[in-house]
Image (tube, rainbow, N blue to C red):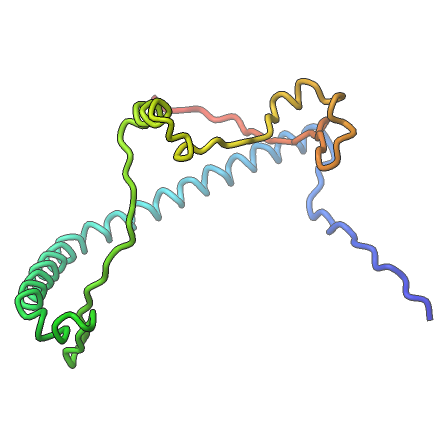
Length: 173
């Protein structure tokens, strides 16, 4: 039995205009739909803003209480750290209702005044701390596509056309 390849068919278009007048009416209708969409999104965002405002005072009170409790727990734990960590042999302590932990962050590097630091490293001969990044210059390739046409991995895409519908809008000032 010979297997035939399945053809992938484009889905049938539901609505196709048949004249210039229908296209004009369809664009007006599309504009109406897009404006209604913006109106609904604005209404939704206004409701979200109202809900956020109504909860914000309670949330701020709880955040403040939470911060105060955390600071109080940390102060007590730091004062009793030797007892909790078995004189530094462990980095956490189980307190029945939860655990406290002490963790060292990995080292990090902060650079201020990048240009000045780079100049200083170069003048001191410390070029190994300066990264040089190689990139393909796509602008140069687009300026001279014939020169790189035979290079595998480079494809120049051209003559791609997009279709856009822009209903006219009147802005209120």
